[in-house]
Length: 277
Image: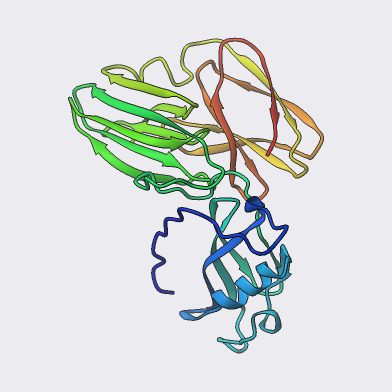
């Protein structure tokens, strides 16, 4: 499949009387096929979205073509829902479901326009640690998206959607700082030794009680210094479970498709956290 270009959307178009901005789905690109044999089905998928259907079966009949006879095919779709961008892939004979403008699936930090329905803060990173740093934001699927390198003495300011997770790593790609963008401007100064004593090695144990209010199963993971996720709990809808962490240890919560819902790090006292969409 050919490379998908990054598309910045400044405004959504209403799809007829009575259709709200948050309900509008714009299909950027859709490809269907297998083993290098993919066809563009963007218009077909857009028509399905415009009809009001939010879920459909991925098959030759619904997409109007069989690009690889006798092989299991996949549908890959990039789309905007409620002003937020998503990327999804579903196998043949499974159901594809459009998201209803939930969390940020993918976001371009260099985009200076306005996403419909979004609210922004600003983060300024300053490197005073004496070594090179790397700045990433974390997309809805938990993937790190590289933004830029920051050399000693440099600064970098970026506008970010509220709630967007950011990571700062050192020259060995170890996480030094994890934070979420708030509603106002914030300055983050990274100094030598900032990563020491911060990553769950301060002694003691704290307990976080996670309550699942999403309507689906969620997973809780702890995060090590190299960014690896270790699943420590699987919580069914409506249930809650306590998980023990070291103070300062980062954690993430993902949905059943391994997309990031919530992230944070343990404090020094016990906490209760409700997980919601």
